[in-house]
Image (cartoon, rainbow, N blue to C red; front, side, top):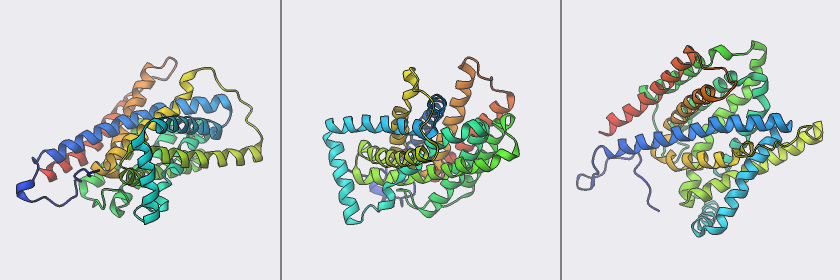
Length: 333
């Protein structure tokens, strides 16, 4: 399967050069898809958090979320010959060394993130959780791009690419400043901080798996298999330590849609990461999370309506995404 033109690839020869605007259009389209994926993360966080409250276990809610996604992907695999071929390509790449074993473990980071939603949001509050997660995601994406761990190779930390994460962290801190909890709870924020770093790494390695498979569904299935196994082990350990959860499964079918939402945003990130890099992917997803959170808070009955600081922070987040994107457009023109 031919690879898309990376923004960091050397310029092609003159007689084969595409129109100058094409790379920037691809970058803009990739960031738009990343924003959609971020919106999915915001919705999934609310769904999984509510499910964890009902069943009485963040680990059980995470297993239900990942496990339901795995079932759906397995059913899709049965009718998709291309995806079955993609799985064989992944296995061949592992045998031949084109794909390293650690590059197929992105699902472990995804599982850790989903479990963290249920384990910490109730103690930290949504504000502290988002600040910690976004900080890890933004800073982690800069490091990962600089190390070249993503399928797009090394992307240097230019001034506009450094400004984006700094503005994003400031924006989210402003947007959520009214909901920060007491300093004694901040030690627990290490978990979502690590989940944010893991999310940036997950986006990078999933891009490698997708490139090896030549198929998004096959790459997403690998992610869900790894994540479900890790979460099942974690649930087993928690049951041995604390006993069975004392909650009950809710009747609302919407609380079981976390797996479907996860399939959507993981597939989107695996598709576009090689086009725009881990940094722009993370910034776009962060923008989607913030804007969608505003909408959900505004339309959900009983929710606290967003304040002025929240809207200011959301606007600054969009600026943070626009700065490195515009820099990419100028560089590719």
